[in-house]
Length: 214
Image 1 (cartoon, rainbow, N blue to C red):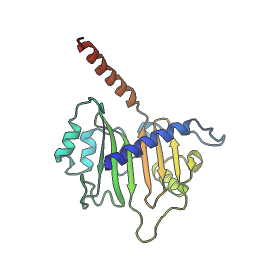
Image 2: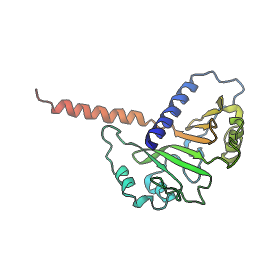
Image 3: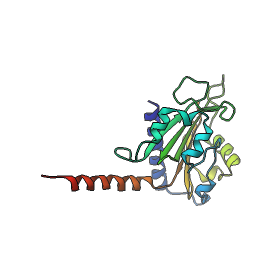
Image 4: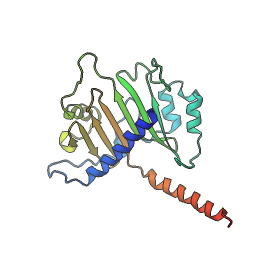
């Protein structure tokens, strides 16, 4: 269920980004020319991290046999190197409960989209502040915090749609969401992994055609 939810969120993020790119930008909206290396590093997680780097952020995960099995999968049909892993707080009863209490305080879950075991997408759900319902009246409130924390463009550079906002930069795309009591941040690399997936799929088709005997 968790995998299905994250696949939906990751796919929806990419779809919304593509749609937003076709919308007219206000003339006074600043252009975000930030590169991939300038993308936010959230709780130590950054886009482009390889498995030997990001596994260190989740103590014990490198010894998990199920995670090892995911990382050892060859880039074959049907995913061709694309995988997803969701981590939960260490004190929870969920699978992959490897988020250290101190470093990930206030985080409900961290989902990683991986291509050849390298991070191409990050989705973080935050724990709502207890006893007050929704913390956010407008997504602009969340944008301000992220912009100040990670040196991102201010509110005027973001495409806002209700309680959801999208920032399109040269090397990455980011979506912030306050539609529920739980705030969420989605960060995606512009790395064109889909082209590689198509190439791998086509190579398999060619092998199949070459091996066919009528």
